[in-house]
Image (tube, rainbow, N blue to C red):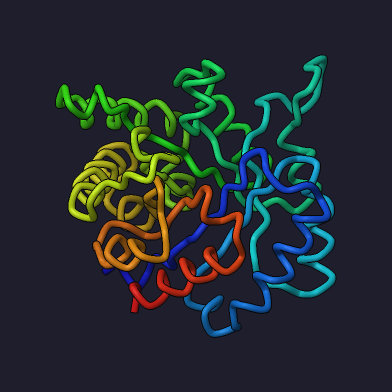
Length: 263
């Protein structure tokens, strides 16, 4: 089970789904389904599309809902001639707490490499927000036995330039690319093995205290049925949930079972 010192983080990545009306309804329903005791034991964040952020922020703050607001992406510059982009300072003004960076869809579809991911991560931290750094391998890389090599490289590159204290407050999400949206999930033991590797790399980079404090999520077709086994592993401190987070009932069940698995 995760260390008692690391409060589990269950994050919902909505990707390019939900208009702002649907987003409001989803968050309100989620707040009804999760009671205060559950939210005290597990931190929950939602990551809507940019067009929904202000609406969701208003609901969370006006209704005093203890769910963190997250974003899916940002640019590394504070401002400038970057048509279509959103700066970290803009997100910080909306009280965004977490920003996903280096998601496999950004890497694979939009060609974001390790250097760009690191620039964005550093910008997120400078703006006073917390990064969720995504790492993970393709099916071909897993079958070739190079999972460890790739994840090691991505963790080192992504966290470069952070102090040990900043690393300690960051989140790393292990997302095997072959399990995202496919219905296939790494076994709990497989996920644990890679999360142990992530923690060992963090220890080399930032020391034992940072390694003990950093939270490591698993992402990749997480459901209410498999989250219990995943959360029972000692180095898995939460989940980065994709499709299942779009349904409030399903996502609440994941957050609830995440809490129970951490007991």
